[in-house]
Image (cartoon, rainbow, N blue to C red):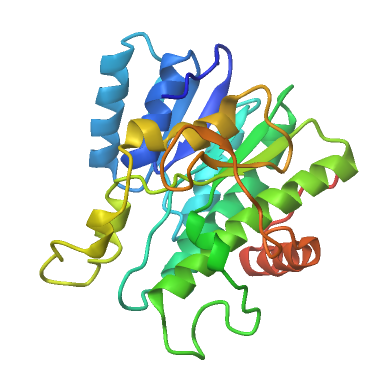
Length: 302
């Protein structure tokens, strides 16, 4: 398992910290000395995750705050509360997401659920928290993508799957490619503006979490049992969280870098390959501008 370096004195927000890689990341960052804010949609599940974190380290500085990335009003309220309560934020871990619901669902703002939850919500949160991040001496934003981004396409004419028949996997792939564009363009902004901020991205390979169950079974009365995914090599969350933890905490990471398991699906975390579309700076800049308009958020002027 990846060993998280000392995080004493750092304040970290982890989204989706109630389960899977987010829960594991919150636990390991806290154990390494960070003050961790578990950003979760469900307060009961958040309380359960917090109890596990505190069981690992009873003297931990950790708390639960409510955040629904599928509701931009919730994103803004969460950010406003942090801006009131904190003087800086050291690390934002954009981890939460939803995966391949079989039918098209919408966010509170009318966006396709995967697009809204996996990209628009984290994008807005990142922009809104940038003033706190830039007040920190060595800020970092780590954004969780997916190996599925390799096949992603950004359809600027139909980002919300309103004109085409909804297809769960391509919609997921688009949202995860967009997450890489978020991380890449933020790294470019930091370079151009001489910010100390380091923006990175990661993917978990094939990690066994409720992500593979909750999304695909959304809206179904009966859950699917065995699937072909059961035959694919996979990791448990303690191993699968290694890539996002490396991206969020390792002192040797490079701005704009992408990390994943060594063997793609499984393995120790290390540098991951960025294909041509993932490195398309013009598309990333265009997407950033479109997302600013959609979410009514923007980067600080300085």
